Length: 208
Image 1 (cartoon, helix red, strand yellow):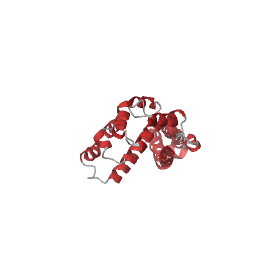
Image 2 (image 1 turned 135 degrees about the vertical axis):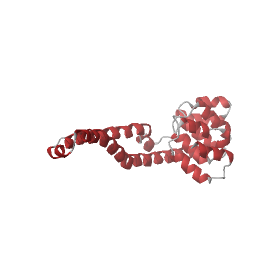
Image 3 (image 1 turned 90 degrees about the vertical axis):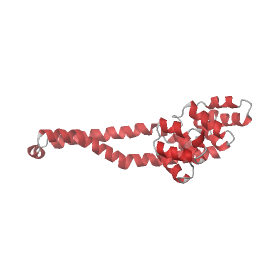
C-alpha cells in the first residue's frame, strides 16, 4: 500500500485515478496508511470521492493531524467540509479555523447537533459493531467445529483407525480452519455489502 501511495504522491496519473480509488476504499487501511494518505501531496492527487469515502469508513480512526490536513487542503470545498463535520464526533474543534464563518457553524449545527446525516436506515445498520459481529461468528463456528471434532474423534469407528496425535491435531486445527473458511466465504461478504450500502447512503445524505 505504501508503494502505491508513493507512486500517487509523485504522479497522480501514472495509475488511473479510478483504480487508485477502488484500491483505497476496498482495503483495511492501517494508521500508517491513513497518515500517508492524509497529507497535502496525496490528498491533492486522489479523487474527492475517495477522500470522502475513506473519511466515512475510518471516521473513528482519524487523528487530529489527519483532520487538520483534510481541512487545510479542502477548506474551499463544501462537499469535503460537509463530510468532515458529519463524520467527526467532536467537530466543534473545526470551528477554530474560522470562528466567524457562518458556513462552518451551519455545518456544525446540522451534522453535529441535529445529526441530519443519520436517517432511520443508517441507525438500523450496526456499522460500529461489524468487527465484533465477525469475531462473534468466528467464535461460534469455532465452538461448533470443536464440539463436532471431539464427537467424531472419539466415535468408535474413527477411534479404531486414527492415532491420538492425529486426533489432537484434528481437534485443534480443523475448528480454526473451518470457522475462518465459513466466515470468509459467507459472513465477511455480507458485512462488506452492508458497509458499502452504509457508506454510500451516508455520503448521499451528507451531499443532499
